[in-house]
Image 1 (cartoon, rainbow, N blue to C red):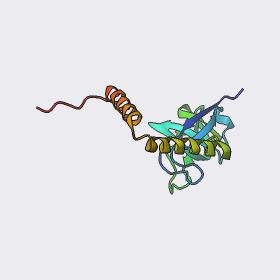
Image 2 (image 1 turned 30 degrees about the horizontal axis):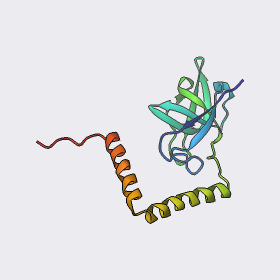
Image 3 (image 1 turned 180 degrees about the vertical axis):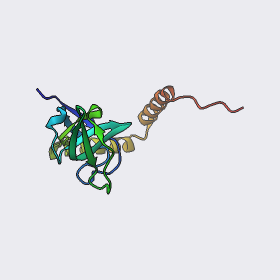
Image 4 (image 1 turned 135 degrees about the vertical axis):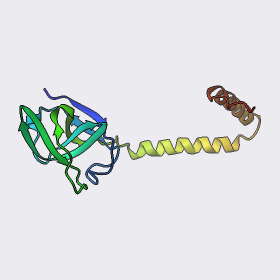
Length: 146
């Protein structure tokens, strides 16, 4: 059984527009012999890198991949299968919210803004003082001047 994991790929824009910087990818753990030409693999070289496989070679019992980013003019140095994280299965999409949810959220924010503008009396001053007191407890103290 193949496991799927989601990971945010760090690196540059080598694979854009197919994969943009920091875009979450759903990866699947596969054996090195299941990876084919054209697959996008993620491997770890100090950071996570997603590049497309141009070809693979099996040398002395180990599988090496020759990869290149879609916008890179040159190929990468061979990728050993030991640093392989997984094969990109698909891009992970952010959850789409309904129009009704977005409208209700906007109304709630607008209600809060209008409410704070209308309450300019004692209730607003007490609320503001409490917020400042709590914020001052959470923030670090500035260094004392000598």
